[in-house]
Length: 175
Image (cartoon, rainbow, N blue to C red):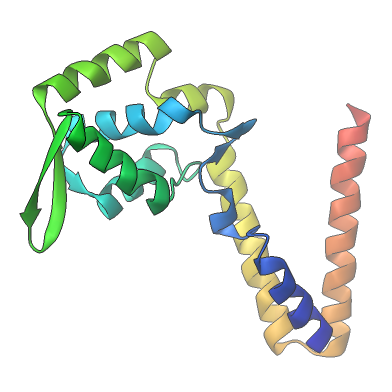
């Protein structure tokens, strides 16, 4: 069992866990302008602080897109610097609200793109949230086996995972 734990730790740096998919949709990362449009659209609906905005974007995409704080906070600051949003303290948190020019910019960007980033992504990829949930559940079950299972159970789990991977590649090869 020790080898399995060591391998699991070694792969954490690759960020293939649930957070490793953040900012992604089918076909790669969200386009550069998507975070800007998404933030303006979210703030046009309701003011919010950075973490709140991240959560609302994740909800809008059914878990398919969770932008990182490293992309959200600087973008919010830039929107404020450009006069498209303004912020104030509320309950000890910096809350952002879209300005009228920000509302106009959001509407223009959404119209030009043909919808919000989550609507556009949803047209092409309707099951990403379901996929992420299935992967998350598989990871939880695998961790349980590795933590509390005996050597025989760990070996059986590894064989199941190898078979699943082979079946997926076989499916892809059939297309």
